[in-house]
Image 1 (cartoon, rainbow, N blue to C red):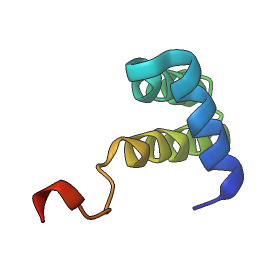
Image 2: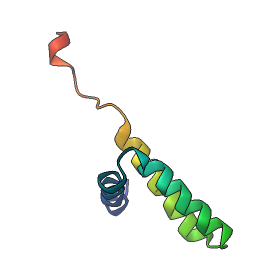
Image 3: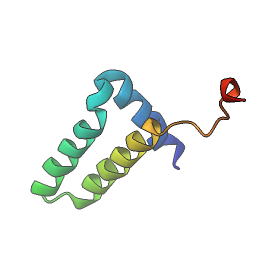
Length: 65
């Protein structure tokens, strides 16, 4: 993943918390309505990056051992 996108995604989560993914989607929709498809795609990528931050870690649960 693009490191800049990842940092921006983390900032969105910091500012918007659980609403970060929907905030990115809202900005993508605004850009699409305005005809700016390139910026809309960037917001969609950010939406995906925020979603990937929500995924549970692949770390092993040591308490389960």
